Every structure is written in C-alpha cells, then in structure tokens.
Length: 214
Image 1 (cartoon, rainbow, N blue to C red):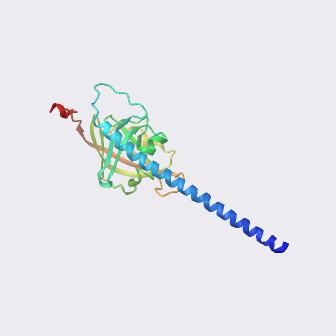
Image 2: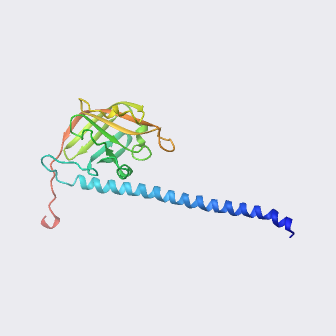
Image 3: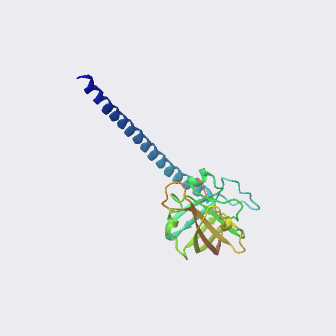
C-alpha cells in the first residue's frame, strides 16, 4: 500500500475505534443504570415489607411520643389506585427513594390541621396521575386509622407553599412533581387535597401465646 492509501485508511480506522469505544461506553452506562434502577426497586420493596411488619407488630406506647426524622409513622392506602406505602417522617432523598415522606412542620395523622405528604412522581406516587374526586385515602397508625376523601387537585409552582399552610379542618395534602412523564427535574408540583371524613380507633395489640405454651 502506498503512502496515499495508508493516509486514507487511517481516519477510517480511527472513526471505527471511536464508534466502538462509544458503543461500549454507552452499553456499560446502560447496564449500570439498569442495575441501579433494579436495586432501587428491590430495596424499596424490602424496606416497605420490613417496616410494615415491624410497625403493626409493635405495642403502642402510651403518652406523648416524639417522632424523629426517619421514623415510620404509618401506612397509607388509596384502594382504587391500588396504592399502598409506608409513611416516614421527613423528606430526605433516602426516605423518598423508599417510601412517602411526612413534610416536617405539618400536622401528624390524628392531629388537628393539615397533614402533608410528599413522594416521587416516577415511583410510589405515579398512580396519582389517575386520582379522582371522591377517592378514599386511609392512613393507618398505631393511634388509629384515619379516612380522607379527595376534594380537589391542582398544579402549582414549587414556590407556592400556601398548599402546606395549617388548616382549621383535618385535611390531607399529597405533593409530587409534575408533569408525571417529564424528563429531568419537573418544573411544577401536583397537589391532591383531601378532607378527613372518619376515624377508626386503634385495636389493642394482643400478643400470641408461644407455640410451646399452647
């Protein structure tokens, strides 16, 4: 091969090597991303199962209780959407990766005022895209089960914290990012407003007799 032919083939080989390197780079990135996504899903399901079992097999503590950030408060269900999740105090990235977070400085379930909960739109709170007026929402804690009914929804800017303000009635506010299928940091917030319509008292915890004593 003469010098001219060699010079023509060199850029072609360079492009081939570059394309091959890019292919393996993006392949590795895709595999890593898929692996991390799988880990997040498995970790969240395991966390929810463990904390749900622990919560409702715990004897209620009498008297005033201090809820620390990271503590599990209860379990929330929206039956029509088949949504069930544990509710954890706080909104840290770790909490919202695994569960729904109770927004600090808002009322706790069972207290007078506005209970505000936050969740990710691309995981636990994705079913909220199909929420309807009149849907029932229940929050079960060691103090009882609180039943809410959806009264309205709205889309607001992240700076609109009015939705978190205290209320005279016992209300529930759910907060997630919007639009639901937006890629990247979503520019708005989807809000669900509900009002408490009922309460069931907590059932006393009855410990089972060990099998060897039966």
